[in-house]
Length: 448
Ligand SMILES: NC(=O)c1ccc[n+]([C@@H]2O[C@H](COP(=O)([O-])OP(=O)(O)OC[C@H]3O[C@@H](n4cnc5c(N)ncnc54)[C@H](O)[C@@H]3O)[C@@H](O)[C@H]2O)c1
View (cartoon, protein in one colour):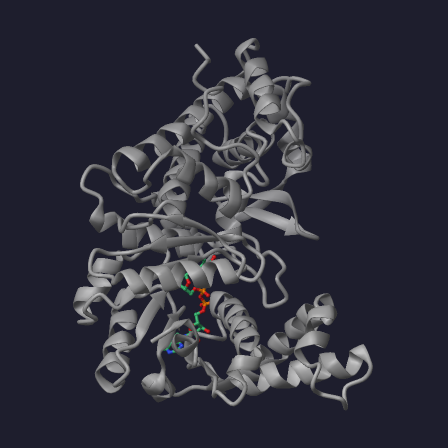
């Protein structure tokens, strides 16, 4: 089966979810490109958008239509060539409309898993529940005569286990998009020994056609991205808990969030990132990963406490941030949760006092948004960390330890065989987490 045939009948499971909707969009655009090639005229293509939440399907289709319109507007010249034989299409608007109709006609939304029984490729993006994933894979595999390939978006479950439990004979790999899939450039590709060479080649070609940066990860729970993030989050939490010996915990959370954003020059602080991903999701991913870790405990009692108090973070349907460790106004954190009494305390009430305790931030430290755009990012980051060495302040001291710890997590991912090399770890953090410098660098260790 060649590339085109493999994409002739695709199913996206969990299509109405955060990840599934983006995967559906990317798949639809790729299949449409194939369908419109002159040599494929007359061939039949289908994409089944399957989700149990039927109420979400109309919204999903509106989202897809709007995104395809945006994509079409950006490629009118290319579309004009593809529709050259359609003399009825004169204005750009006519061509865009024809393209939208063609793409939308590819997609069949529905709630029934049976739609996947004819598929040649199944993208899976249902909830992060290994038992559910195995049940769906097994059911499709037993009823589908095409020996379909399964590309799972799992964030943490080892692929080898899914393969074995669903008896897929190596026809599954991890194709791990980042959120949101249509925007984020990174795909972590997790192959297992039983995958055929053809399947791996196809996966690489597909990722390339979707304009993704591929980083291979070995099949170890959490892979590279969550392998770093979960440990980094636990470190941030433990540092805040440590500081709470000398200040209220909510103030310590504020301090660590500030250090991990401003001093480390990252796009957001660690507690804001936990909120963004979801307190519940982070806790859940740790729970999935933990049984696979022999020498460490990926667990936080503080995350359990927030979860039990109903503080979960994540986003509203319109994409705006829900409150978690921090409270947000117009997307910006303005207050911090006090786990002692369940109330948010405004930064105004204590921020200046904690800032004073942290001490002066050197002038060489620059905001992430400036650093990430600079041509000489590593040089500037090295300068900033050099500045921390010369200051004996609380904030700069913790920042150095934090950065070294992040580096050690990266090195351990390499020595444990999760990542093939330091570059792969750095690429995941640079591309998937938008860091301005890779965690495995020289400048954080040149610090005594
Ligand atoms: N959200 C992220 O940042 C992110 C990033 C990378 C990977 N992932 C992974 O992607 C997967 C999906 O995550 P998400 O955040 O999009 O979750 P989500 O809750 O937004 O979406 C899951 C979707 O699956 C549907 N679903 C549940 N059971 C189903 C079934 N039996 N059949 C068909 N559809 C079903 C739900 O209705 C929902 O629409 C998970 O494995 C997650 O770990 C998530």
